[in-house]
Image (cartoon, rainbow, N blue to C red; front, side, top):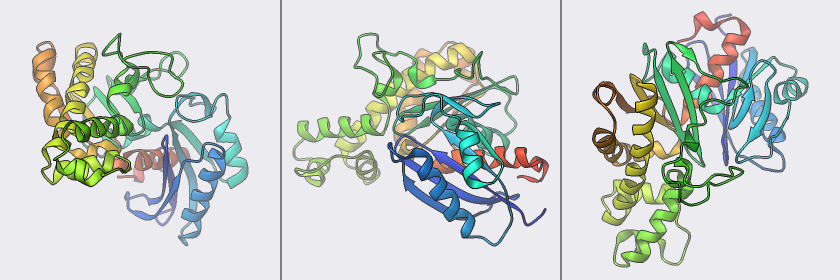
Length: 320
């Protein structure tokens, strides 16, 4: 049906975005929520209902990306680093409550779908996707196929260790020194706080005052030219580059796509990352890879989830 839509949902560690999407990838309505740890499924249902009520078009299916290890055939969230979703049959529970077909996959895999079908990695067959927000999600396309691993637990790229003696990884990860511990929204806030204390005359220190430092504030000030904020973003960029260099050496991708909320920093983040990859990655992979921002920015996960919903509805050929 030409007028039919699906609803794509991108659930992150702290935020949720749902969108009513048609077969040309036009978003007719966006519903935003905070991800409530004590009511994750309720939050998804509320956002989907808002998106459904905002259009008079038929809704054919719902696609949901969750920041979890997912068994995609059954839509079960098996483990999650930042939300209490362990062995939860997300697909079946949502389908029952919404009375719609539901498909569930990892949120970074959903973002990978959007960026490889229609975005920054369109046409590439070997792609690494990193979504950086509360944590780091990962998606892998190898030889044109999504890599899921034995049980759906592959591509946890935020848990590549870049410092064996580094800080504890956030959330439920038992490791130390993971990439996620150094590169994330909370990590940028912490680095911004350190820079503000070290440079009390900086614009960052004045903006913070005695208040709370946030990643978006540091990013905004970095774009405004504040040197302390720029240094904070560059520090994360260099850490990111160390992680990407390892991924380049392992997978020899054509493209590394970086999305999620932190990509709002743009080349202030990616410039230092590219420089470190040039220094550390092996040839020829080093010289072949492109490290690029997600075309759809923070909406890659939502649009990819919508693409998965169109797949489930049997209308994938109409999309894009």
